[in-house]
Image (cartoon, rainbow, N blue to C red; front, side):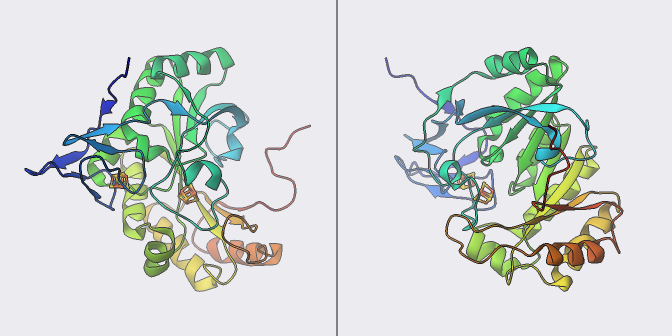
Length: 295
Ligand code: SF4
Ligand code: SF4
């Protein structure tokens, strides 16, 4: 028997059966039978539905520092859940095999089943990570709500490209986020990645206002976002919200469509000094042995 997929929460309908998804700033106008840019929200007969509800591409137990979160439940492991697809198309995506397609082997879980597995694992938290969790906002929210009732913290590792109303809904059930602030260059963000810098900035500020623990990651790519002025702008923005927000400056390695050589460690260390003029906690990433590595 064919089961009908779950209805999405964030969309507007038009008289001709077209719908507008209002979950993220792309605001896809979707005709019947078609899906939005993120591929996981589909117009089925004038109703926006979620055919990838509960479709999980990966489950793992990770050190929480690997998310990376250095100031939230340090030394613990987190029950990590990956989904499929993304609303951005970063040409350097390290998880492109799950973020740029829905054609990846998945298993279907209910929120109840995932929370039960997380409890069995002994981890004190659940992380929604690997691909972009926010395009599955309704499912992730259901998991976070149940997790809270089960005494588990919920973590989002996200690109932060979500509109304010759904962001408020999901952050109300979230205890910590690591947000990618990929660049200060609005044009590069939009044209090359498909993202919106100001939306990400608003998400970071909202999360802080709502009392969620926030850490930020910038993947530093030679020739794209590795100028001192760019990193200073990012650090200044964060410091204006709270100078204690940890910033992770991660070294890029060639991946997916980018063949640019890796970021030299000396670049990361120089930018760390720049960011530390504004922020109290700045961490180099993807260089040498990670801090979370234990034998
Ligand atoms: S969440 Fe997906 S369908 Fe909705 S606006 Fe964003 S890209 Fe489009
Ligand atoms: S936002 Fe993250 S998951 Fe999505 S394409 Fe970019 S790097 Fe990959």
